[in-house]
Image (tube, rainbow, N blue to C red):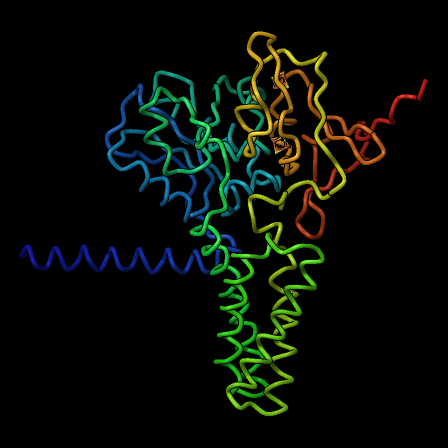
Length: 387
Ligand code: SF4
Ligand code: SF4
């Protein structure tokens, strides 16, 4: 085959890859599973690092791409085709899935060690101690973002502060905007096609503009932000239609479309961001508490907190909950603390025991809800009597 034809094929493959990724990014609210199992990245050997991730196709391809130039093993564990954080928070990427993947994918025959690196955001669902107890593999929680993996591996598997923090920068915001704009545009286009097809382009443009604006500014709007955002969206839609010379039916459609799109886009806004406690425990009144008597300075909490709420106090072998105001109630520190020194407390001061946090279930809205009434959960402890 000539060099030109080979180049052409390579370009076509790259284009297919880009299109697939764009499609997956635009419709990331639905699962995109890929085959679980073991992948070799580069030319790994018996002492190469073992990295574990979930079987969300976009994540797997991004991890493989980030690891270009590195020799490593990638264990893809089943997570229902959902990204790691949502799957771990939602009970689909848990200790069980990781143990099963490590035991069955063939990695134990390929390496001469039993250490694996998990994405930090898996810490809400995968208990490192329990994995070690069940199958002998020692887990480390690596960086939040796959692109930091090469630096993390080259740096003796030590995370910098930046590698530990979740970000919601412009690129991530635009990606989430696209993920909401695409289905919203489809819904309004289908609705317009049934009623008045001429309205479809305008409504699709409205969906794209509103989704982009929403993810760029919504968390910076003061309360009641849903109302304020909705009023602004409807006013902008009406102004746009009026300027274009639209008549009463178009104005009514713009008002209804603006209100409906606001409701759709803000319905699960917190669940679509890494900074608002989305996909986490639904009780907004809960706050994290540290029982210093129990703390032994293991620092698992410090290692997994995506908001850097903890500060180490090495001389005292303990931590400070120095920035608890940043807490998004993800529960990762509670799940990982081997001393049960961390727990949530509700507004009345009742303590929600760590075991209850480790045993959660999803409610109908896909939020984590502690089943306080389940047998043996011991979920909510009454506050001590006042002296
Ligand atoms: S709270 Fe728990 S995980 Fe954090 S340092 Fe103390 S013992 Fe370790
Ligand atoms: S302190 Fe809050 S944000 Fe940090 S790991 Fe614990 S629950 Fe998550």
